[in-house]
Amino acid sequence: MDLSLDQAEGYLLVRRVGAQSITLIDRELSSSFLLAPDKAIENWGVDDASQLDADHVSVLLDLQPELVILGTGQRQTFPAAAFMAGFLRRNVGIEVMDNAAAARTYNLLAGEGRRVVAGFILPTP
Image (cartoon, rainbow, N blue to C red; front, side):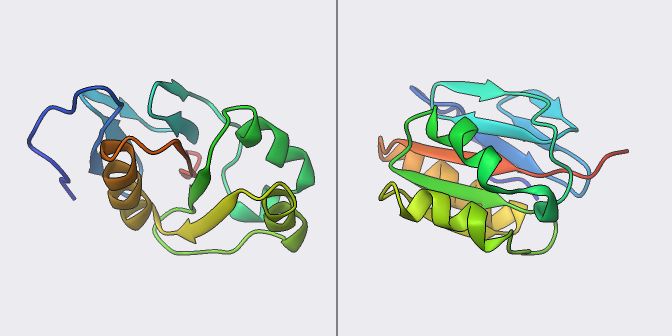
């Protein structure tokens, strides 16, 4: 699914979402990654939402988000309650979506200048 034809200014844009990869501007990524408006952290090391636990929370919070978007692949899959609670305890919102919805939401919020951080889970080849 192609998301945008325009070049974004001031933030990293998700251009395309596929079943096995996601394209940031003009670079295709095929392993899970974290995305903030000003940087991408590749090779996140998570290939399924069931792997997420309280230890993964700090990695995302280190990026100082006001909101976290979690893309869990082609289908929405909720991670463990301990993972979700880690954000709520710090008053940081978290939304879980499939990757296509997460990309659209991330692009919209980043385009508005919001400090959004997205985690995209992609299957291991």
